Amino acid sequence: MSIRARFRLDRSGFSLDVDLDLPARGVTALFGHSGSGKTTLLRCIAGLERAAGGYLDLSGEVWQDAARFLPTHDRPLGYVFQEASLFPHLSARGNLEYGRKRAKGGIDAAALAHIVALLGIGPLLERRPDQLSGGERQRVAIARALAVKPRLLLMDEPLAALDLARKQEILPYLERLHEELDIPVLYVSHAPDEVARLADHIVVMEAGRVVASGPLTDTLARLDLPIHLGEDAGVVLDAVVTERDARWHLARVVFADASNIGVWVRDGGHAIGHHVRVRILARDVSLALTRHSGTSIQNILPGVVEELADDVHPAQALVRLNMGGAPLVARLTRRSAHDLGLSPGQIVYTQIKAVALIG
Amino acid sequence: MPLTDADLAAIWLTLKLASVTTLLLLLLGTPIAWWLARTRSWWKGPVGAVVALPLVLPPTVIGFYLLVTMGPNGPVGQFTQSLGLGVLPFTFAGLVVASVFYSLPFVVQPLQNAFEAIGERPLEAAATLRASPLDAFFSVVLPLARPGYLTAGVLGFAHTVGEFGVVLMIGGNIPEQTRVISVQIYDHVEAMDYAQAHWLSGGMLLFAFLVLLALYTLNPTGRRK
Image (cartoon, rainbow over all chains, first blue to last red; front, top):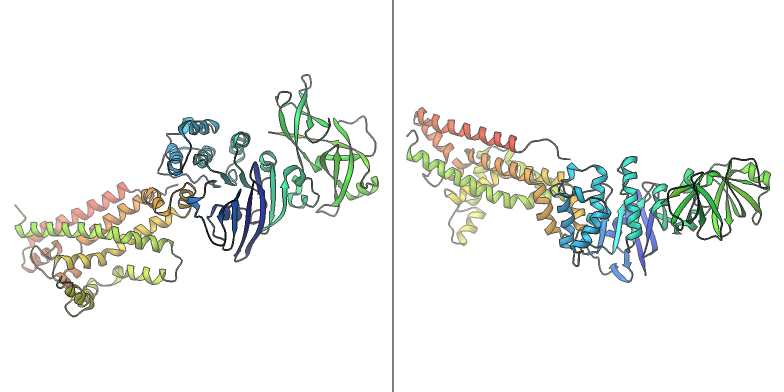
């Protein structure tokens, strides 16, 4: 079960050349700077852009090859545009119904009610798009895309046109979708924090080419990629809450891939056993050869140096560590790396200054 | 009764001509305007120019050429004769054909502007919601272009009501067939019958004002979001 997509497209000053095999489940982030071709790729997949000689199939069902090109309205997909693009002449409900009544085997009333509740748009249904806020419009647009019962959901930077407050308003809804949806989602974004919160897989694009593709945790831990992530270089790890310290309002989370290796984080109110994601930025990790005492840093863990690499700036280096199975990336000055004499296989103490609990 | 039977006949004929012309123009203008709004073809310029010709040409020139082409020896005239329809000049049908051509830009241009303002996005959104292009045209484009249709209809109608030069060239002055209000006014003035001319002219003035007033109040020019 996978999505196969192969497209070549030449435009003046831009070319797209991708050959992807994407998982047919979970959220795959198409990540890259603006102009990297991620939106064009999404539009090719939707059939909104016609790439001659392209190939696309969804779990064996061919949507495009040399002989056929399924037009957009015949592809069982949902599409969320960067701007909500609701029909201004229809109410929110009219917008939801527009696709639902046209889709063959569309969702029934109960399923629609569920989507409406999931996105919290019940009270908005009779309003017209110009009576909705930007965030509300985007939630209606997401519900509208889901109401056609798509087999693939395409989202083109659905949060990019919104301010920070509106983004924070929508992200929890997207996380709920992530938990509930059983269809693959392709999510275009240039925002590392959105990718960290929502994605299971990531495709990193640059200048119309795919530079990396794989599971989020593994891919973010690759040292050749922080070049594309800059200050946001770091890892995202799945973890489970195992302990809560009521006195200090801290919770201990244990990394899913590691045996009882974990960190203390601010207690987010999650129950013990709850699955969470933590994000540890490379710049928040420092290394020591011995275990320090008398430091404010709470999370000090032993780890094995796996790989060293140069960072973008010549003063800096990146180090990938293995924390009993879970990867971690640290950013140091090259002088520190040299002074510590770091080399692969060495055991060091990682001092983690900040851990962000996401989702 | 200030209006004579001849005046009333002219008014009735004018309204009939304007209604038939406007209806035909909306049907004909829609595909032309849609094509002009969306094509990237080299032909966009030439076709747009031909549509706009009546804006700048003297009506007599248009009338003259229509008369020649639709006359017994013209290509259109030969064709209509071969169909057994006779020739179009100096008939109501001929007036309709001439009016359609004469008022075409007043219908096509507002429609084209309306279609261009809608842009590509609503059509793409409709396609991702399973609407075929034709379905999307009727369910999305037409409702969104409604102000454009109102403007196009009103301008096409009013402009046809006001035509004179083309009518005179191609329709002559046949009562109840081609003698429209503007020709009737001309006749009154020729006959020094200024009182009658005043009634009809005043009526036309009032009509034009009311039409434009309705257009500007019903169709506020404020931009849609």
